[in-house]
Length: 347
Image (cartoon, rainbow, N blue to C red; front, top):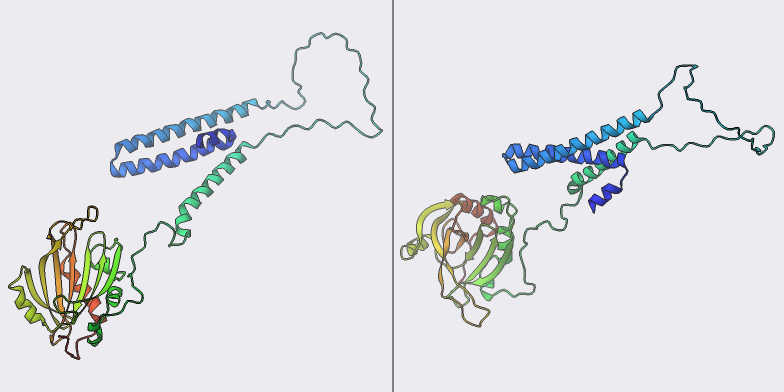
């Protein structure tokens, strides 16, 4: 279709367009090929440049032909020589009589198109099209269709909070945790600044084996590389007691530290992995060992009077970020979680 369009264009429009397109693409392809040492691409660039050279030669020949077709200028007073051949006598033909004072106007010569003007117009049109294509993405709004957008925290309107949240002063909800976690700089803290969140959610859970008496809100944000989970457990377990319990578990790389003046502990463990079979109605496969995860547990107050916030990061590939990433996330999350100052019986 494009080739047919070019063939329909006048010669002095078509050929300059071929020259501009061929030279621009040829030089650009050759430049990229030499930078990346891609010799097949360099061959394509040479083809474009040879094609452009052929079109330039064609235009030069056409210009010379137009110049040679013009009659040569004669000296002043000289008349062009012509061979005289005897002609038979011609009978005079009656000429139409014109009114006195009126002469017969000479036939108007057909004006030839200006080749240079056509070539300039063709190049100008091509330059305008190129400028629109070049500047178009900058002039279009940033939220154009097709641009991926970061996931926002999903909410369930009208969902009633479990009774444990009413009995726990200052308890945050899953939605509040999700808003605090789903920050624009979270991927930068994880060391993957170009990624955007694909899933973000919060839930108002209660701790297991507590008969729904201990509030445990949770939030999770997922990227292409890492998944970050944050939970807050409002029980009476201190970080010191938590570290003692780790001795009887499978936690490794345990290290105690302080975060914003609160006792904390870093540990590693494996996630659980299981399959749910929805196609045949079966119960799915057995629970297995998933990829490793790194967890930072921080007390809810500086005196470690019970309750803790856990930040866990893992990836499907098994890769883990630096511990500084978890510390950075904790420093952004903890200000959104009120310190534990008032106690009531949570059971």
